[in-house]
Image (cartoon, rainbow, N blue to C red):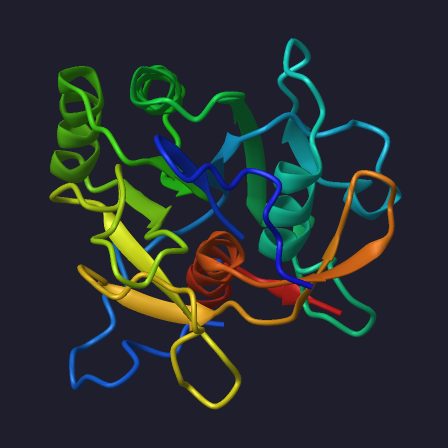
Length: 238
């Protein structure tokens, strides 16, 4: 199933995107700063319901003011590795998730969420959404993240003939494209600029109704890239 719930053709895109490097290139995959101990991940997306059984036992700071949406719920399930039977879960003792809602996906809304995540000392920012139009506030929000060694992963977008959207296109942000299990670009993935690619085709994810959906796009690829970053640096458990 191709996920299109947050797909806006004119101004804003929010996208559905295991880390394998850039398809069709010899570039090295950026791994970001090494992490140790407990890691705080900022999930900048829609609201996530607190009553999802798969998230029990994890330290999750929900955004109670945010409207609940399927998109962030599915992204979180992929990041935590609870999205399918037999998946390797991130050890709950090594991770904290803080949710920041950007219901409309606009540049200034993204900037506000990024600023708050940095204030809250997040070490990884997972942004499975974006916008066609940047703003000074968004660009100023991203700069200190890169300067302080915070890893910012953002979906590049689901339009192959357009350049990556914001904040993925900004300096210091890791722009994520989507590939299939053969390492080929997903047909609708943005390709320029791309810093890394991750599996983003028919990825299982748990929605807000606690059902498994198979989704495709650079949003879920971004969640997969963050999950692989965590898998390198923190503990996994079955």
